[in-house]
Structure formats: structure tokens, C-alpha cells
Image (cartoon, rainbow, N blue to C red; front, side):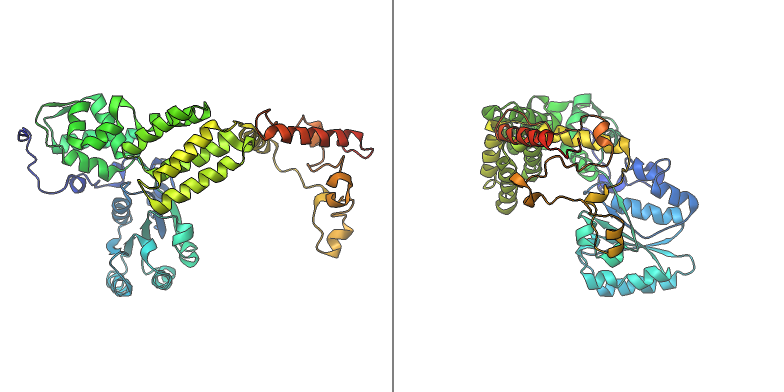
Length: 434
């Protein structure tokens, strides 16, 4: 029999509601928007409200931020749920805003992506006239879920998952509010933070439901209250990102058994299979690369299967992909080449495109020499324009710019052989630019 809590919670109001910040300054996280020089910080300081879309995962404070922005700008606040609302609610918002002129109104639309195109368009004339400031919240990518007319009239601000520092601070505040007589160990806090996985609301709901029976809560005591799945996921003190790191390194190390073990640990503990699938796609591109290009396609197929079937049926596809990636030949040559090119471009700047590589759709451009002396590779021996240069003028003299260096593993062995043959043709060609 479970003992009654020694620290009864006197409030019937959910902890998440009691912990809702009362000022913008009290919001944890989102420093990129609310910190010094942040877009929303500057808007508040200049008292210049603007329509916006707040895009971010659940539990990061989109609704709270919208309400506090209304207070900071001195605007009336009205909220619409796009899940339950429709055109009538938009008309009601227009009437409400008209009644509160000239003070102004901030209309908050939760889950704005749930409105169809016609409903989203209904906001446009009132945003343009300045009748109200629209703040929409969405967990979906606005590029795909919000129509372009609305996007052109609203700034998109990306809210980030709460990091461990913000979650730790939130947890400490929550215990002071909900269970002021309870002490939590560092490992206990770590378990709560890991379980919340960037979601502040989830963290507060976990703490609200703890009902402590002892003055000190350690990791084991908290795990016992959170349930078996959480205890399995964090068995031995392994945090979520430690496990995905172990999975990635096992695949990179060509150990299929260890790879399957860490996959099973994560899925058994409640990790989102879609997240694991995305990481497998990353592993295929970063660690297998062109040594076996089939690996990327297999990882993508596994991700699609996982999305269509869900768990547990889709888990087998992930296991297939993990096993294939582990036994596939490994190469990070493309990864290294891409990083090297990126660094070079950032440092070098914008060299002009050589004239012979430019397109000449008009006579003027042709007269300027665009496309002149370009050699069409298909008309050349071996289908290759030996000695031709495809880089901006002068770069050949900067350094050896062969960023991509194939390994001697898998398909890249043959790729290197071909590159060697082409290099030989370059050196033998009389018009070589090198």
C-alpha cells in the first residue's frame, strides 16, 4: 500500500498553470528571441508590435509568450483555437478588436496551421489595416502549413526546445511551489529533465504528480513514481543522448550486435522511433557515404516504413537498417569534403563564375563571351573534357583543392580508380588549364 503524501498539495489548480510566468522576463529559455539583441526583446523595447508566427515544439511556452507580449505592448488579448474554431471566431475577433480601439488588440491563434487557406486569408485585411496584431502558434513547419499570403505579412520566430539548464531551473522553481518541503538530489533532477525531453509542460506535469512520501527524492524514488518505462529507459543512469551516441558509435564501429542492443534499449524505453529513424539517415550519409550509397536509400526506406506502420511493426525496419549500416563499408570522405568546402567558401568569399561556364540566353550575353569556349563533355573522347577547369579563375593556384578524397573501402575504391584515370587524362591534355 502506498503511503499518503507527507507533503499534500493544497492547490487544485494544475502546477503548469500556477507556474505560468507573469512577465516576459520570467520566461525560461528562448534567449535568442528575448535576450539582449533578440528580435522580440527589441520589439518590446521599441514598443513596436508586429504580427508573427511562433513555431516550436510542444511545451516551450508559445501561448504564455503570446499573452505576455500583449501585456508588454499594452494590447487587449483575445485567443482563438484553430482546432475548435472557424470563420465565426475570426469575425468575433474582428468585433472585439473594433470595440477596443484605439488601444489595440493582439489576437492569438493556437495551432494556426489547423485553419484552412480561406480561414487564414480571413485575417489578412485586418492585419493590413492594423485593426489587430496576429500571433499564431504552430508545432508544424510554417513553410508547409501556413499559406504564403499570411507568411508574407507575419514574421516567423522559432522557439526552441528547453535545454537542460532551463529545465533544471524550472524544476527547482516547481518544487518550491508544489512541494516546498522536499529536497531533490542532482540525479533526481537529471532524471526529470531527461524525461521531460525539452518540454516544460511535461516536466511540470511530472512534478505535479509525484506526491512525495519522503523529504528527499533521489533518482530511484522518482523513477518509481514515473513508471516502469521511464525506469527502463534510464536504467543505469544512461541519459537519452548518451544512448543515441552509443548507437551511433556502435554503427560507426561496424558492430551489428551492439548496434541492435542500443536500438532495442531506446525503443524499449520509449524513444520516438521517428527520431531514431532520422538519426539512422544521418549515419548513412555521414559514416557510410559513397562506400555504399545503398545505405542511405535503405535508411530512408526504414524511416518511411516506420512512419507508415508505427511501433512495434515498424521497429523491424529500423533493426534492418541498423544492421545494414553496421556491416556496410564505412567512409566519411564526403562528410569531410563538404565540411572543407564550406570552410573554404566562408573564408574565400564570392569568386565570379568563369565566362566559359556562364549561360548565354541573350545575344548581349553571348557577345560578352558568356559560354564561349565551353567544351561539351559528351562530345569529347571518353565523355570527358580533359584539362578543363570548372572552378573560378585563380583557385587552382591557391592550393590543392581536391576536397573529396575517396577511401579504399567499398564503392569508393572504384571511384578513386576513375578519378585517377581522369586526372591522368587532364595531365596529358595539351590544353590543360591546370
